[in-house]
Image (tube, rainbow, N blue to C red; front, side, top):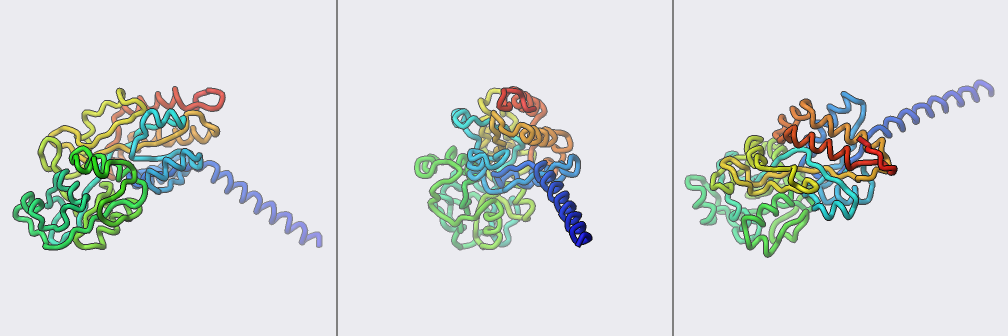
Length: 350
């Protein structure tokens, strides 16, 4: 009986120690939720950072709308959104936001015999397709823009996001700038009342739909187009030039961005001037509370993004064709952390 009791006690002690160790490991992890646009780079950063620091990141790729709701409900350590919140919205909720990387929305198609970059589109043409006004691939407006390209006499299946999405915000913000009819009838936001098409959840869902459905068109973040080897279209920019999506054309779109004059880092990069600018570019943002109930956890979050802004983090971003922020901007962001993110006593967290 004594041996059984001793064995049980030792087993309980071992299990208890294991549970405590697991709890300690879980406690060290930081949590975030939101935009699918930056998920590929956040996943890469998380993998590399855990190997370096031992601190893990549990990030839920649920869309910008969900990320905003989760940080507002205080169920995660940070939220993520491709739609920047306006300064008055941030102040109302006691939130701070800062950008992490720059990328772009890409129109992708499933058309047999069409090579990546072979099809050309303009902003107004994309708006008319998504308005349901242009319904066939051999519509005269598309044919005129693409002489020599064999376009089928088939219906266009429009694919859009079904969830609240910052990728959608960038897309419809652009369409609102280039199409007065889109602006009046549909407008912009993380979710809109789509005039036409079918919805897919996340960048992943839209990519999957377009890959499966012949004659379809959708929009995804560039990393998803690359990873899934999808056929993208060129888009005419504000200067009248047709450009392909790339890190270089995203950089060109961001070249004139002055973050120092953007209250709350509220800055949009769609339809920017520049000979080689990609017209549907945008930054992605992190949302955190200015007053932190868990300052130690907040410090770990900031340490993670501080590392992400390093040369090592930038290299990983470059590899996935995201554009890292200039050092002048990341230094400005670090100063913002120091001055605005504090514990309940008013002491800076970072």
